Amino acid sequence: MEKVILARIGEIALKGLNRCTFEQRLARNMRAALSGCGACNIRWSQSRYYVEPENVDFDFEKAIEMLSGVFGLVSVSPAYVTRSEYSDISALAKEVTRKAIDDRSKSGKTEFGFKVETKRGLKTFPMKSPEISCEIGGDLIETYENLHVNVNHPDFILYVEVREDTYIYTDIIEAPGGMPTGSNGKACLLISGGIDSPVAGYMIAKRGVSLCAVHFYSYPYTSERAKEKVIELTKLVGRYSGGIKLLVVPFTEIQLAINEKCREELSTVIMRRSMMRIAERAARKNGCSALVTGESVGQVASQTMQALYCTDHAAEMPVFRPLIGMDKMEVVATARKIGTFETSILPYEDCCTVFTPKHPKTRPSLNEVLEEEKKADFVALEEIAFDGIEVIHC
Image 1 (cartoon, helix red, strand yellow):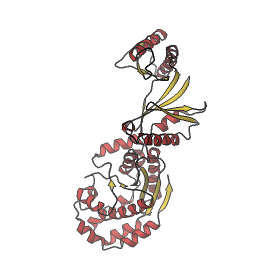
Image 2 (tube, rainbow, N blue to C red):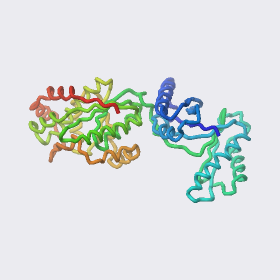
Image 3 (spheres, rainbow, N blue to C red):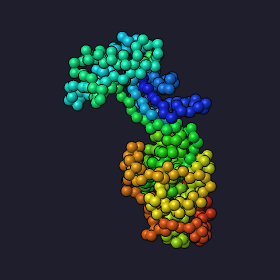
Image 4 (tube, rainbow, N blue to C red):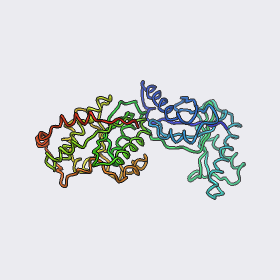
C-alpha cells in the first residue's frame, strides 16, 4: 500500500489575496520540521498538503510527531492512496480495515463497531458520498465477520476522500492550528524558569510570531542548574516556533543594587522595569518589534494593574501578555499540553524569587518608583549587564 500524510490547514483558508504567502511559509516550515525524517515531496492541492515519501526509509512515525507541532496545521493523518476507481477503493478499504482491526485486537477485543465517512471531491465520480460509504461498509461486513456498523460510538472510523486519487485513513491527529511561524514578525520573550513564560511564548508563536528570548541570571544566587532549566524550556518552546536564540543577561549586580539602595516594597517593580529596558534593547538589536511576558492580571503582587502600568512605562515597545486573562489552572493545562510543565516545576530558583520582598507594594505609583530609581545608577549597571550577555542557540 502506498502511504502518504495528509496535512490540513485552519484559518489560513480564510485569507484573501495574500493567502499564498501564508501557504508558502507553512510549506517551508513543514519542510524544516521534516528534515530529519527522510526525503519527501510536499504538494499542495485543494486546501491540503500531501507529504509524499520518496523512498521506503521515510520515518512516518517521526514525521507525524513533527507535523503535529507545526503552527498553521490543524490536523494530520497517515493515509493510504489508490486510484479513484471503485474496485481499487474497495480493495484498499479492506486492507486499511484489516490493519485497524489488528491494531485494536492487541487490547484483547474481538468485536468492532465501525462507520465509513466519505468526502467526494471528484464530482465526476459516478457515486455520491453516502452511496460510497454504504457500499464500502457492506463490502467490509462481508469480508470481516467481527465487524458491525455503529455510527454513534464506533471503535474506529474509516475515512475515504475521493479526489483525483483516493485517500483512506482511520486516524486524525490534532495539530495546534494558528498561523505559520514567521508570518507575523518577531518578538522577544522574557523567559524565566517558571510555568507562565514558556506558555506565553508558545501562545504568541501560535500567532505566527518568531521568537528570540531573554533570561535574567543572578549567579551565584541562582545555580547553573537553573540556567540549564531555562535552556531546556527554551528548546521545548522552540520545537513549535523553530530555533530560538536565548540571551542570558547577568543580573546579579543590578539586583544587589536594588536590594541595597531602594525601598524593599518597591524592589520587584523596579527590578521588572530594569528587565524591560534591557530586554527592549536586546529586542531591537535582534530585529524584534515587541516584548512578550508571562504576566497575568492579579496573579502576584507585581502583576496588579498599577504595577503593570509602572512596568510598561519603562519600555517604548509594545508589551504582549498572552496570558493576561487566563487563570493559573488554564496556564498549567497548556503547559502540560505543550510539554513544558515538568521542566518548569524543577526546584531551581530564578532571579525573580531569590530577592522577593516580604511585603511588596501592590499599588505603586509611577512617581514614587521613578524617584526611587534615582538612588542607583541604572544606566551604568544596565550597560554592564548588556555587554555581558551570553548568546545560546536553542
